[in-house]
Image 1 (tube, rainbow, N blue to C red):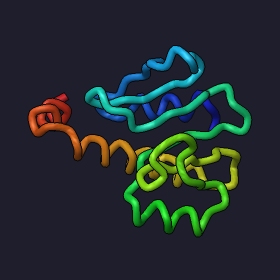
Image 2: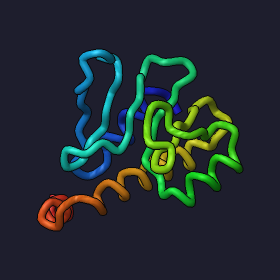
Image 3: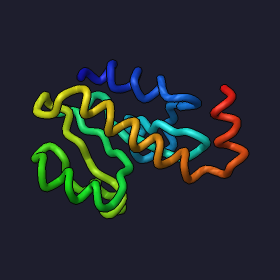
Image 4: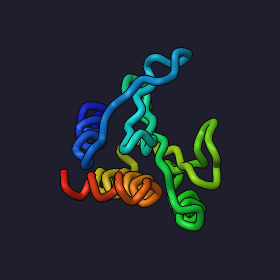
Length: 120
């Protein structure tokens, strides 16, 4: 998965937007839904890495099974993983991890916001 493909997939999620909210890290893309972040990524970084929200039990399982998945760097390690996108994980799996992160964030949004996304 290329940086361009990763960005396009994140933005393809319903209601997703890209933002650059950190003055100290202007290269850090954040992908948000309902004002909440579901993915962080410096798209010009090599190797490409993306931080994604994850169910805590699933996060532990994924880290144990895949060397390319580590606890979230500078994030709550219980809820975030950093995924290295270097070809060792299938693109399909990376897309599924992005979708799971998005779904977790949407599930935490107020009901009115979830309903608005469903209608969009």
